[in-house]
Length: 367
Picture (cartoon, rainbow, N blue to C red):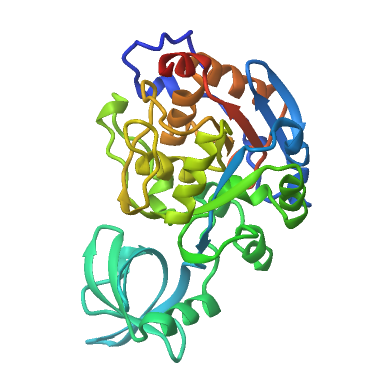
């Protein structure tokens, strides 16, 4: 992954590039879920499996899960338009990306060139939507149903919005309805899964609880922007997409109690990490919080509450890889990814996982 990187260098996008063999991109998850491999970095790099996670944690540690629920947000319909030569039809795929109102969604449309303001897309006999705004490939759709009725209609007909690197190789199917959802998904609103949590099942959660590892839940509705590429050379010029999240009073109290008792706070996934770091004050105290976060965590960031992170392996040149580098250091990040590739770990959303402990230099700077 390039030359050794000093922490105080000006970092560019190329510092986060690496060559990934296409065969390492996972198109299906391993079953059972905890059978996925687990790379552990705690000073040294070790190879394990997710079901070994209890061996690396201790009583009093706290896992922070993101309980968002993925919407089957990819809808297929027919645009019908009366033309001078008769009725014109076009097949349209719309992927919901952000709710703007009870009956309004911002969406990505394909092919967007077939849509104009005022067009009606019919998805079923009971569900249609009008195009009320358009900007390139993004359109605003006002649906014929609203609120919970719209939610139920989308669940009934929608497909899981698999990431582009999977969707380009195979279509979503019935297996993805379960595979691309965590076992504790509760609050509907995400258009991408918090994939680090996909490795947990009820048996593993029960085992962790038995040895005294605690857990709490926060909510961050993962948006389609998580897949957007970084387009600037100097990473500090990148503007993050905003995502809605909430840290409840219960979750905040649990995190603060863990810190006070000397336990380690370990978010499961970059989404949970970004949210609790957003909700933390300057002295590392978590407050109940709700709103949109666009926090951009990159090398140089001083973590307020996070001690370690469980996360999958990320795309080259991605903000998620930059977050990992902030936590473990640039050189260690490159060592971890070189090891993962050489040992044929499976990458991305349906791939294997890692447990990464914070760079000791960050801990030293906090003392």
